[in-house]
Length: 53
Image (cartoon, rainbow, N blue to C red; front, side, top):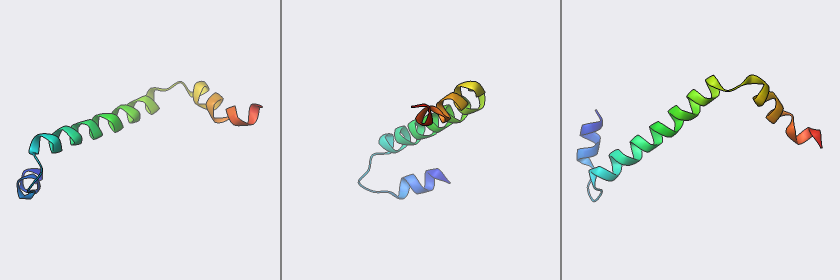
C-alpha cells in the first residue's frame, strides 16, 4: 500500500519520505508509551501546577 503511494510521488526522494514517516511514528509511539508508564502522581502534580500559584 505505502509502496504504491510512494512510487507515484514525483519530485520527492523516497529516502526523505521514509525517514519522515519513521520519525513521526517513533515520536508518537514514544509519547504513547510514556503516557502509559508515567507516574500518575507526577501527572496529577503537573495537571494542578497552574492552579498552585
